[in-house]
Length: 81
Image (cartoon, rainbow, N blue to C red; front, top):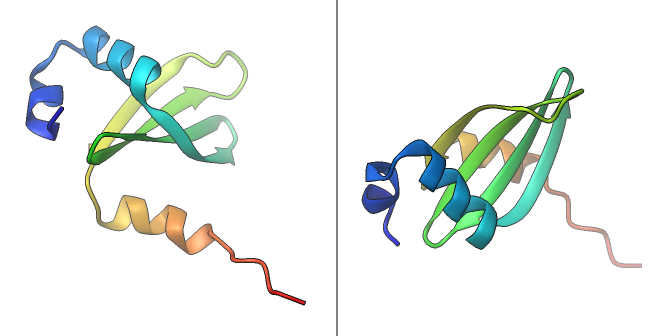
């Protein structure tokens, strides 16, 4: 599925596809929000959940850029011994 096709779907259908077919590739805890980064086909979806209730607050859909860079900057490769 292409990004434009995904965005054309109703929001509830977007979440259904995301949760059934997407893969969680990163999480960030920033109380009161949990941010989960999903990989879906050729793009990413960052979903913001309320920390206490896990209610979905909103999502951001993107292919690259600053949002993805935020996760890559936190990624650390272990040093070999």
